[in-house]
Image (cartoon, rainbow, N blue to C red):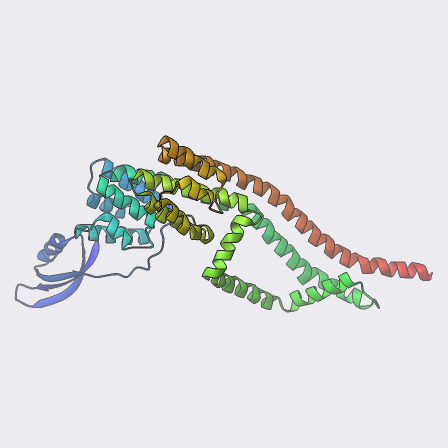
Length: 398
């Protein structure tokens, strides 16, 4: 239900202005008529909404409901009204669906209305809906996209949950080190001050302890500034390109390649099955990979495909995909079942990425524990070493 600004006339001919919430012009007129007013003019109060991308789970729910409603014979307009009336969605989603409904009422295609709300709706979704509107299979396309976004959301959720325990361990390491240097080490300063010479490790530890105990607030400010400016610097195109390149070439490169390959395969399968030309599939699919280093290489991939080359040969040269992807695409090209082969590859790669995540966590946990033990052990050595040396000196002098 939208908000409108209106001008109405009373029975005595006096004009009044105001605002009213209604679904359409008929409802506005009825509400004003009940108040003894005659509608002269109205316009919708435009509300500026800060557009931001919808989450994968929200996109999945949107596509699933749209697919099921349209499949049951309900019009797109009515389906958007039902989605907007859902009490479980956020206020931001309600605003988006209301804007979509208003544009559809004006005769604009749903895909066009969605493209006007970028980046709320991603290019993949917009182009898939545009192709489905032309072919008349919007319901099946929406349901297919619902499955795709659900799988992507599950994979992202699993990755976040898998890294939860290592993050907790990292936080504990910082907390333990902070307590030791801020509260425990200062207790030994008086004892150490009576010793003529301190070992180098002890002097370093006391220096760090003095800094933590007296300037802890500066350390916090410094960490916050690094976090803020680090995020800003990481968004610079040149820096982002190098970071994304490190993702596929660094220690976790193998896992990242599997995730990127699975994401691209599923996207390409959806686009290709919708009847979109292969070069357009590549142009849209490159935007969903999530790695600028890989996306940069697609300029050459698209050129080779447009020149008549095989997609499998072009993908084989991409640094950032697993070799299995190009092999599966080659089989799909030979058998004429490229879309189904891509779906199969995406499912297999998703499973492989889940297993790789689990293995990574199993390796990370003991490494974090060893790091914590090494830090605590180093501190203990720095504390015990001067005490041991003082006792040795006393023993030698007796």
